[in-house]
Length: 389
Length: 133
Ligand SMILES: [Zn+2]
Image (cartoon, rainbow over all chains, first blue to last red; front, side):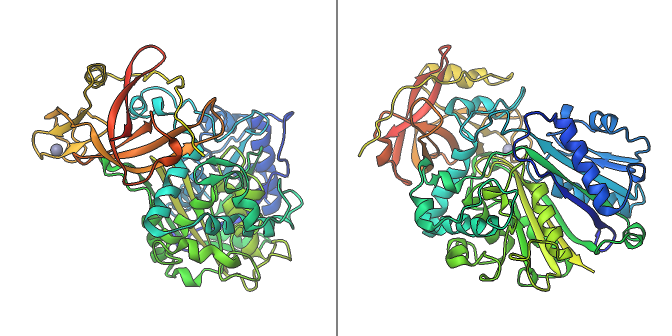
């Protein structure tokens, strides 16, 4: 089912805190929900669909639905696709609305990894019964080295350099200087990135995203409701979701599931990469951006390093302004899951409500793309294309 | 400048039913993968059903324990000692996640020939790792 034009993003809210030691995770979720409702001009009683993922307390829908006292839900979905869950949720919400199952869907994300001392160099307990764990966990795979292995192979196959990867961070820092809530607001240079401490070859500290508390929420609504509100109309036009794994041993770490979700989303939306005025691209690490841009079709496979160089991702200078809030590399990465904030900045751009210094002129089509899990073993991918109506 | 591989505490594998023969073979210095009796294809990590054709006729196959480095990364922060994680392309075809040991971690290269060695985890299980051949 194509959901093109069948639903709109009517509310969006980003929690301003980056460290919230005295907030409960439930409170952060609820504050995000409240902010998104106020942004839309709706009330809690209008919500009849609720979506959340593994960051929600209990990793179910009923705990947060109960906390917020949502009493008339007709559609719920706790699909967990790691960091890209919320992009998937927008697609699923559009499908549910198109099928008449609900009219106003709330999606929330929140977490406190900064207060809890989380780090991308820690081995994470991944739970019981995982079939792969006995064959991987003795080797200490951690978030950063799983992505680093992709970067190393990408460099080997395509000649990508550390300086090219650094340009992703440089562009993000140019945008973050205008965001008062961003964790890292200093503009950095390529030299500063490649001279920052090596964490896991070839990724330096400044190739890695921040660890932050916080959260965000969006509200997806039917066309009738969207048109009854006083906010600019942001229409959902293309979606794609998939997973990529190790193919039973035929591992290929130089491309991501974006190679499938991108083309599907573009086909549904009836547009192509060159039509995109602004892109939110999940930036857990600099390599994540380079690979996803290639896989989404913004450049030829293997040319991502060249594509991001020389400020090509900087708003006002480059051909493809990306992550104008500073992204995960500089702004925030609440709950270690960057998919929600990717949607939020794309909505701001389409509404013309981004910071004036980074607002893209005539921004009528935007893309948001995310990855969940790890590029280095198993991951989810989700692409969302939206248009200003 | 060299970064010699150092011994570090290895997590015990928490086995699922069906995994024991793989680790028993490791204890005897053998690296196994699985091969399908119906479609003839090999796979790793080992499953009870062939991931290519879903046949239940899958058997263990002893590898030569040799291959080449597909990718690697030396993790220099976060752990007590630097360590090298990577994937090896086995001569039999499948790629497997592993660590590289008993060598200068700074001298590792993609495409380099490696051979299996076995290292003990905290509780004494043997796990396969690789070293330059
Ligand atoms: Zn088979």
